[in-house]
Each structure stands twice: as C-alpha cells, then as structure tokens.
Length: 611
Image 1 (tube, one colour):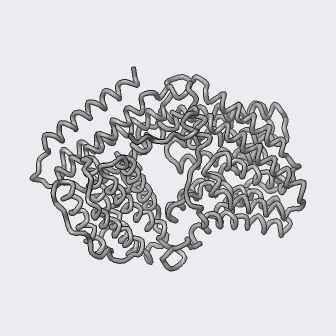
Image 2 (cartoon, helix red, strand yellow):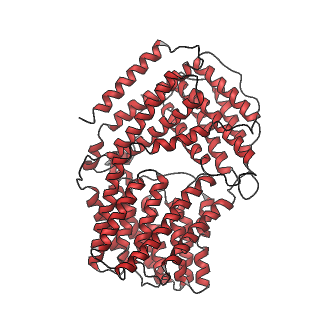
Image 3 (cartoon, one colour):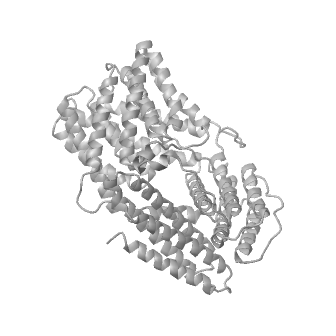
C-alpha cells in the first residue's frame, strides 16, 4: 500500500502551520521592475529638495504595489485605481479631521470618528476583494492624514498620493510583459495567458481522470476559469484598435465552457481516458497564446455521453478559432457573478465592520493616551491586521510581530551605516521591488513594509523610530487579538455561513436550470460558473476559519461537510447536464438516483451545523 509522506507542519496546530506556509511560484520580474521604478516620484522630490512632498506619493505607490497582483492590464485598472482614489479621499479627510480637532490630538473625538469610519469601511470590505482594498486604504489614509506631520496641505497630499499610485498604474499599463507576443504599448498578453490556462487546465483534468488527481484537477480548472473571467471583465483600454482581438479572445474563452463541462462530467464518471484526448485542449491553448489557428484536432471517440460532449465541444471550439471576430457569447457569464457576490453578505459585513470599528477606536484611545509622537502607527497597523483575507487572526498576529522586529532591526543597522536622503530613496526602491514577492508571506511583507515606512519617516523630517515601530506593532497585535476574540452579539462564523449561503443558492439555481431548460447552453454555462466560483469562495472561507485558534474555529464546525456535499452535487449536476446535451435525450435513472442522494446529503449536512 502506498502511503502519503507526512510533512513536519502536519503535526502542528492549524494556526501555527499556517504561519509557516507561503505561496509559491515564479518570480514576477515585470512586477519587480515596476516596484523599483515606483520610487521615481520620490527621487524627483528629493532632487528638488522637497522630500516631504514625496512621502504621500511613495505611500500611494506602496499601497498600489501591494495590490499589484498577476493578471490582465484591464483588471488592474480597478484593482489599483479604485483603492488609490479611496486612499486619496481618505488622506484629505484625515487632514481635515486633524485640523478640526486641533493638531490631531483628541482622546474622545478621534476614537469615535475612527471607530465609525472603521465600521463603514469594514462593512464595505466584505463585499469583494477590490472593495476590501478600498476599505483598507481609506482607513489607513485617514489615520495617516490625521497623524503624520507633513507641511503640505491636505489637497496637495491627496494629489501626491494619487500621483504615486497613478504612476505605478501607468507602469502596469505601458510596460511590456516578458515574453509578450503582441505589439504596441497595450497588449492582451495577460488575457491571452489566462484563457490559455483554461485549456491547459482542461487537458490536465482529462489526463487525471480516473485517478487521485481528478478532484484537485477539477478545482484547478475552476480556478483557471475564475481567473480568465476576471482578466476579461475589465474595461477596454483601446476600444477601437483592439476590438477585433478582444472579440476573438472572448469567443475563445466562451468556447472553453463546453469543454470544461464535458471534462468535469468525464472526471465525475471516473473512467480513465486515452492519452490522445489531451491533444485537442493543448492545441487550443497553444493557439490562444499565438493568436493563430488551432490546426488539426484528434479524431473523435464517441463511446458515451461524456466523450460525445467533449468531441462536440472541440468541434465548436475549432469553429470559434477559425472565425475569431464574431460575437462575444461569453459576456453573460462574466457579468453574472457580480450579482452573486452581493448576496448573503450582510451578516458577515456587520460582524467584520463591528470588529474593525472596535479595533480602530480602541487602538486610537491607547495611542492618544500614550502621547506617542507616532501615535497614528497604532490604528493604521490595526487596520491591516484585522483584515481576514491576509490569513487567520493568530497567524496574522505572529507574522506581524516577527516581521516588524526583523524589519526594524534591519533598518536600525542600515541607519548606522548610511546617512542622507539618497540611501533612503534607494531603500524605498529596493522595498518596492521586493513587495511583489514579499506578498506571498505576511511576515516577509511586514518586514519589507517596515523598512519602507521607516525610510519615509526619516524623509518626512521625523526622528528615527525603529524601536517605536516595534512597540506600536506589538500593541496593535495585542489589540487585534483581543478584539478579534471578543464575544459579540449574534453568532460567530457569519463569514463562512454567508459564503455557504451563496454557494448553496448558486448550486440550486444551476440544478433547477439544468432540469428546466437543458437546451439553454449559454445560461447553463453562466450558472455553472457561478456555482463553482461561489463554492471556491466558500472553501477559502472555511480554510481560513479552520486555521484560527480553537475558540474561533469551532464556530464553523461542520462547514467542510456542507462544502463536500455541495461539491458532489454540483459535479453531478454537470454530469447530468452532459447527459441532457441533446433535447431528445432523457436523464438516466442512475444519474437521477445519484442526484437525489446528493441533494439529501446536502440537506443533512446543511442542517447539522445549525443544531
């Protein structure tokens, strides 16, 4: 019998194992280059002997660099631009608040204002990743605007912040990506790679069918479809010049839907497939990358419904690849998920918003009471720490503490060896270059950001503050750890419950549409994407919750059973949809029995956590 080797982290508690876990992947050299070049506005202000003017610009570039993730250029417009606008507004609001309370010091007004803003920003953050980035940046900028002593007036600070973030966004839009095959300043390389990855994922799922890799392969295919959907969902950056190329890419993405459905049905059946079935999807992936035709595809093998559906999907894909400038049938699926994201989020938003507000108010009271020169560091740090998308709470606290100590120690050594503004600009540029890689682990990201922030503090005319940075961060860690485990009114685990609500609703809509309108392939494809995408979001929420400390993790007990039953129901619905591919075909009794069994299993699992 083959046994799976155990890793050292498997014997650790989940919250501690998460601390030692880091994302892997190739180094994004284009993002590293952008991060280094993002320090250009700061260098310009130092050369002009106005270094304080470069501090807001560098802060804007730093926060935009944290949001500069892999993906298409069109998606980066919203992912970087909207949080930058929110941050600029927050910086202006913060300076106005500081002026109103007199010098940015108030033991009553500031905690109340920051608590109310944190409540609103936290509730907004629960609606999606871009909204989360907007909520975080507006709160961080409000706190910095109220506490950081800079000579520039509020409106100028906001414009400089926006200029720094806009400079990084401009670099994202104009700089060519390594290996890009397009021409001109704007290329569809990110979109092409995302669509090609879908066809590659289809091939890997077909290759793994009948073996232990089928379930991870299906999850990888769902993730690839999500990423391609996001990559194609942004605005057109060159509406007229690239319209034909964009229509071609949308058509090729839409052609992947039936292939994904057929591959999922074959994986559900669990029968190993001949090696040649992967040749077609891989030929299509290569054609997407080059922009050319797909060439000859393997001969059909129409033994059963899944194979017939796969061959029909390959034939339709070949037709779409031969007529690239047609309509865009995939748009409905791209738009439909936006409605799903807004459902069943209010309870989770209230819970998260209340904790953000409490953290901001409590940390501001402590900071104002201590009368520290850099009091704004404490509430600004809590805003980052309280974000659940950075990992479980205990893991965030440990990583923040370790990263701050390492970063402060490194900067203290650097300050002893060099002096003057230009070494600080170099330090900021190096930190900007490291950010795209550092975001893979929160402790490393914290260390890099600590060095960057301490460099900006000196450039802003404030005294060195390495030790103060450590103290403020440890106080923020204690505050977030305490507030994060407070028993608030209502039931804990709203985030997981809301994600499962969304996923169950999407699965039932998909099932109902499959039974009521089996001939509507476009509508079924959109609902299938919603079902799988919401399932992936629910699994992410469950994984984060299960890695919390036991006092918090127990509130989502049983959620994994619901997610497992839901996944089996959605996969079975996809297999049934393939059986009903032709209007004259009926649903086999074996499929109907399995479908009924999975529905009953989901009902039992769904009722269990609520008892």
